[in-house]
Amino acid sequence: MGTHRTERTLDLMEIPWGVNRARAVGDGFGTRGSVGRRMPAASQVGVMGIAKLTVGQILFMMFDIRSDITVQAGALGPTTEGLMRGLATLGALILALFGAIGCSCGGEEESTGRFGGANEEENVVPQCDYGDAPLQGFVLAPDGETHVGGATVEVPELGLETMSDVEGYYSFESVEGGFQQLTARKGEYVGDASAQICAGEDNKKDVIVRPPPHTIAVVPGDYDTVQEVLKGMGFVEGTDFDMLTPTDLEDEAKIGTYTYLFLNCTADPNVEPAGSDDDVADDDTVDDDVADDDVTDDDMADDDTVATSGASDIEPLDVGMVNENLFNFVQAGGRLYASDWSFEYVEYVWPDAISFPFDPKIGPGSYEILADVVDADLAEHLGKTQIEIYFDLPIWVVMDGVGEGTSVLVRGSFATEFVSFTDIPLLARFDAGEGRVTYTSFHNEAQVTDDVYRLLSYLMFNL
Picture (spheres, rainbow, N blue to C red):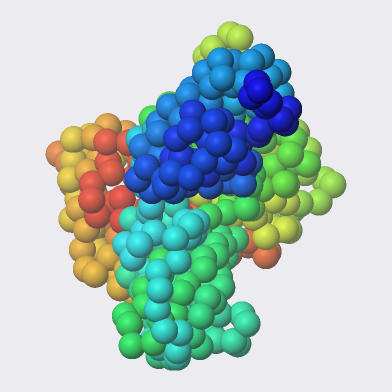
């Protein structure tokens, strides 16, 4: 009597991984134990589960599936369904193998900040016992290194608030255990971070602050590069700050969208320096006169205030319009920073705020000044009352005095065989309307000594 084989469909994907499947075909689902570690079927693991397997496990499963396909095609005959499922699973495992190799090679993104980074994603949560404990850290610029003092730091959910010191350091004596959201703010600069508070541990978290997008604008110049200082502090051009052109200053609506406006040295090469014929900075151009409708090109920007020696392809600015726009920008709360040869903007619009000599471009080149820091907050930030300022280029602009309401932050003296000045302002600022104007005789190229860089970083957050 011949052997009768019962016709049935055997789904090898249901057989535990590691079982000898050739034997399983002969006696149903087989009786042999698993070879090594038993593993679930791919249909039970799922695509995401496969992706989490080790490389060794994936290779073992690929070999096992190859055996399945051979058995399906040989021992059982051409079973299309079993063959296709085996091939599909083999393909998925190959993809998972490449994914596993890629994951093992890729590193984590470098964190920033002194205490484990600020604002990084916390993919792996350390195990700890949550409980009330101290929390400390630093408020930092986007570079993760520059300290931001005087920033307000809060734990909003708990109603906690403190302020960072001159080094950017903050601390809370006791914070409720668990994950707490931190916020930090310094003027327009804001940031947040999530801190894990563990009982009995030294909990630390830095917070990086940055400006809202398109808050800072920089007008380029010939000898000044304040934009490089911004980049050095981690600010990104096109996001954290925008580069404008001198002609953009004619567009009041455009510059009015910014909070901070930096005018580099010689930001407008077509404007004559103060002291030229028919100088516009006379006593009649005071704040009350600048902003009214009577201030026209005839008053502030007649033909003699525009140079004809500039590049022929650059159209001279409408100086009267620019001056009025800058006045309105500051009156509405804008912060204006100007350096060296861009003094014309300050002198034309606020002639009583800072006094300049008849021909102010008389500072000596290759000259180092040991300057006095006379502003208490700046001195505390720098940790010193004297700083070195190097003037690499000649004919830098000299201030010889300031008006009422103008504060001097840094003073210095210099002397040549032709001229000498004693205790003159090198950095000054004044409030106007809701805003503020800051002017420096030095600029930000070769003159950036360590002292000046720290001074400039202070100004960036205290304009």
